[in-house]
Image (cartoon, rainbow, N blue to C red; front, side, top):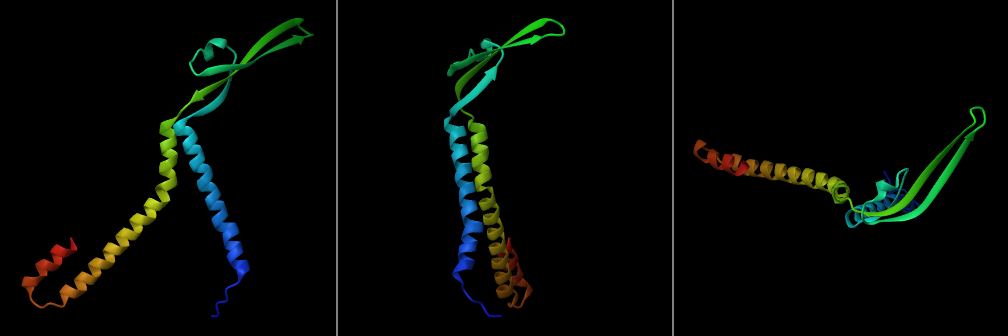
Length: 143
């Protein structure tokens, strides 16, 4: 099998693999920061008492009048819009945990594989010793 390095393969790998992954990590990190430190959110509701919460500012009040000709009735509905400053640190830290979860998984797998190889090497070294009295050293080191 002949391996030939071509720049277009490298560019395809970067464009199709690395760039989307970096964009995903950046947007997830930005979202987590906004959840933890806070941001303005727009809320709408039909009752002005719903927005009696601190850190809220009124944006608009929209009144809709609906007239039905067949029943000769008129209905009025008022909708209020506010911007409120909110934080959600629990969801933000969940997002941070999910960002680092794949790295923790890979690190755990590598660690267990390295421990398995170390145990196999030690067992091979100490199993060459003859005699039953030295077997307890092998078992002690493998634990």
